[in-house]
Image (cartoon, rainbow, N blue to C red; front, side, top):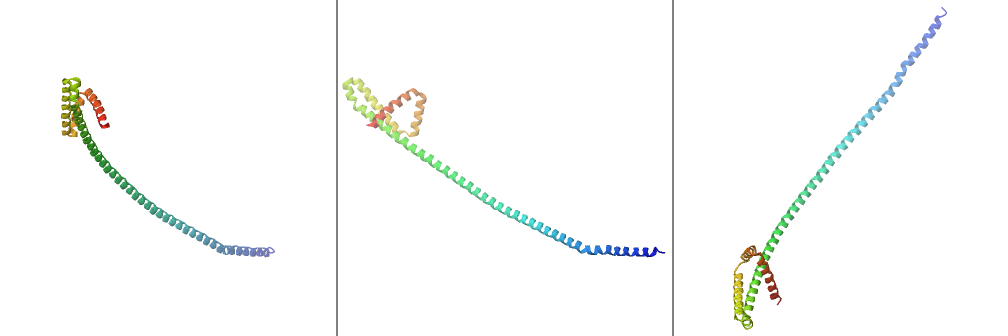
Length: 203
């Protein structure tokens, strides 16, 4: 019977501890809610920042694409312009070369005609000079050599007339044919003719 107060008194403190244990979760609940709220806010801000970064990256990508496209079009336009300019310069050079070739051809023809006239005049003058000296040759060397001089003078005059009557193309054909048939004679005649013409023009 003496133990009952002790057992009764020992049961009451247990009730107090149980009450204290039940009260602690109630105090901890606001802290948990606040921590959760902070986590949610941080998560929301992180997601917002991530979305903003994605949007910025997309905008930069689009802007870069526009810039690249603009530069590409500009480069394409410049390339087209350069190609057109090069083509125009090529056509102009082609036309100019054709004009120069035609001018050279015309000038060469003029020089050939002029040379033909000078050669004909030179032969005629040489024939006249030989004819004028035929009488002196008769006196110095005899009539036989005088006749040689007269025949040579006639031949020179005839050749001068033939040369004057022929075109430059015909003279060229005759010269090529003569050189083909008698190359040695052609070289000798060219040397003699050049010497005579040089002396005539020098006077």
